[in-house]
Image (cartoon, rainbow, N blue to C red):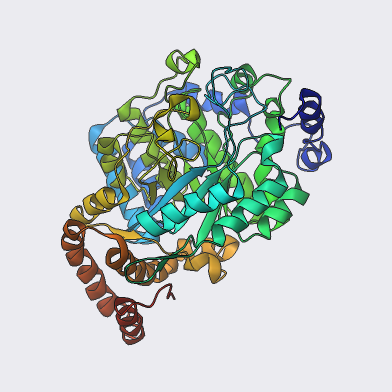
Length: 498
């Protein structure tokens, strides 16, 4: 039954709790200072090479950079210095996260939305969009395909801002996903970690979300520039409130969600401004809560149905600038996980791996009901934007293996309590990478035996053996216990972890 317009209006008016904004704001100013960031960028001085090398050394020590230091990196034009930055970015990634790439799939549960963002295919004024929201039965079927046929262990579940995606629906949908257990050839498939990309919520609703056992909670600011944000998000919408969105992660921390994901939609405004603003957001969270972002994402603006703005924003990010901003973010926030998505082409994703990427999606479909449905993912009116890489998980993992990377399906950190400040300390020290190495091998063995094609298995065996050899050399005391787990996995046991 359709929801009446007056009910939607009433629901929207009750979403924002001004007291949960005011408690964080100082002197009526938020922590994004547009004038200060712009003035730093306007200096446009090519930095001294010696200072750039000092900044790189600081990043290699896994210390968060300052805005001033990050501006220096942004302004580097010398090709030799750029190459040193790129090399350092990969070193930082390997020091913190070892040689692994985490894979996941996005699951869109509906395309209803009360907002009217100029760049989004789900905007309420797109009258041509065919709206739908998945039932709990349909959600379980999607999860069965993802966990039982493809082999995913992690999902990022995406919700629109609409009464149909109420906190009650969110809680029930997450429980439905976690309930799925599918028999596979050698074991079973299940979703072991549900991350959430959703609209800003109140502290009370975030506590309910936390209690479901979610992983990372993502809210992207889209653009941090106040004036540009106002231009893109009508004032009569919930999303028109810049600060309600900006302080989402503050409320999440208070609600007990200590794994949080930041992001900006590059192409809405000057990419250099957005990089500095993401750093300012990260430092604000570190200073106030002692916990920075668990992940940072950097989607680029893509064409979407009935959204001409996407073709004329004026801030398109070139491939070279995109690779540079990835490098700078890796160096500026060295402990964070970095996510590149299937918005990008296979070629761009390959190149980005060497710049410090730690997570990516695969077998991606963003239509509502697309994984289990009858080709709904091919209908543009059910998608939010266009995809650049639609390859299968098997194809992507085979490519990773051919490049020497191990795909990790590990979710042990969440279940062992290695979240929030705990994982921040472990990441900075390089200790978390050791746990990750053990669990990456175990989960990769499990996935290969349950889901991989023969071609992918063949390419991947040398990667697994190389990792096992490194574990034996680097962690000799743990190696015997690790091999016991490894043999159990080979014999059909599942979900073993350190």
